[in-house]
Length: 212
Image 1 (cartoon, one colour):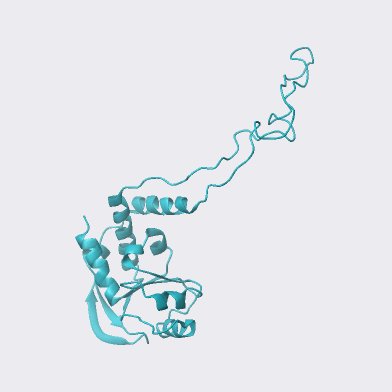
Image 2 (cartoon, rainbow, N blue to C red):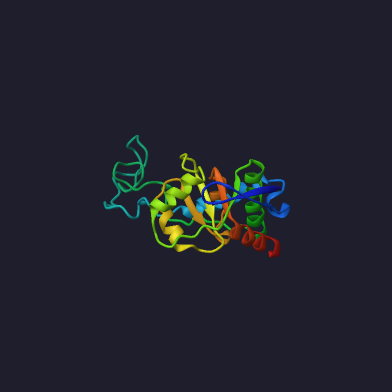
């Protein structure tokens, strides 16, 4: 697949790049993408939920009534979960929701997500974007020149960490900046436009063609 390279004003530079079929031309595997997104979201959970069990609530442990002969159910403590003020039975406890996912599975998931974006026509290639200072106004102007100020989600990928670009974009809604090594399936599938700088495309191809 060939794409035209545009500048920060949205103009065609006359140059074209070829997207690698090994990265952007795969048959997407929906199941591995689901697993990778599931793991990503699971890792975001704090898992700090907690309710008190019967051994943690305040109250007497004295037996309320005799075991037999009352006509009602037996009861041994007011701290039982069947009474108001008692502990919660089988309530939530702190836990880690993360789970293991093989490296090859995660790699296939990211490649599937990249291929999905390419097949849907959501990938664009732009000249390398650098900024001499942190100015949100200047970054907004770049997005306007690229016609990406339409309220849709944009994921800008740069070849290396461009600190001024990251800081200039961080307060803009629906715009995020990442490097090829920091890409994840969740963010790729959660964007409307994948904007790749030329050095990012080169780094992406080096990353996934040399990886096992």
